[in-house]
Each structure stands twice: as structure tokens, then as C-alpha cells.
Amino acid sequence: MLAAEPAPDSAPAAAPTAARPAVAVLYFDYEGPDPELASLRKGLAQMLVTALVGASDFQVVERERLEALLAEQDLGTAGRLDPATAARVGRLLGARYLVMGNCFVLMGRFRVDARIVAVETGAVVGALAAQGGADDILTVIDELASGLQTKLVT
Image (tube, rainbow, N blue to C red; front, side):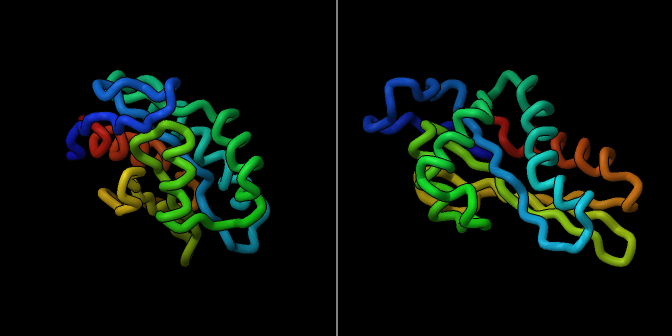
């Protein structure tokens, strides 16, 4: 489990309180040839945000705010973000943790790997995966959301 940490003194005024750390969910990477699965880059992030919003232990950064920052920093078209760049984005958002990852289909199996990055250090502090049949994508996403909620509890 991730322990709650005090908010840094340099946190923006709009940053959430230390009692409820903020989490931002970045778009997931997908590099396969299937255009339907390519749409999961954004769709997976949106579904995870929806699932995580109901958890009372943390706040979820609004997608519009995240997208505006990515566009402003010219990171939206850059593709993948490494943990250090993602941490910089998180600091600008006032988030304590970022969720990022990738999804793919291999031999008829759909898999999502997610990493939790601590914004303060850029270190990956948690990781999890969920997988299932290619026709069970929603079940896989629900499993991932449940695992994230558990790992993000402060």
C-alpha cells in the first residue's frame, strides 16, 4: 500500500490536501495494428477515471485539466511518457501519483499493465496487470480498476 505523505510546501494553491492525495490517469500506450484497440489509449484511461472517482481515499485529476496541460507542454503528440516526464506533469497538476501503462493483445489474450508513479520522486511505486480473453476487455478493465483502488489506498 502507498503511505500518505505530507504535501510539499511548493504545491500549487489548487493542490488537494494531504489527507486525500490526487491521482492523475494518463493515456495508456497501444502500438498494435487494430484500430479498435487503438481507441483504448483514451478509452481505458477514461474508464479507469470513472472507476476511481468513486473511491473516497483519493481525488482524481479532471481529464480536461490533464489534457490542457499535456497540450501546453507539447506532450500530447510525443507519444509515450517516461516516469520522469510523467512526474513533471504530475507536479504541474498538483497530483501525488500518476497511473500510466500499456495494453496489447497477444495470442488472443487482452492484457493491460499499469504502473503507479510517485510524482515527488518519479519512482514506480506500484505495478499491476490484468488479462483475459480478447472478448473480455471490460472485465479486464474492471479488474485493473479494482487493483488500482487497492494499491492507491493511503
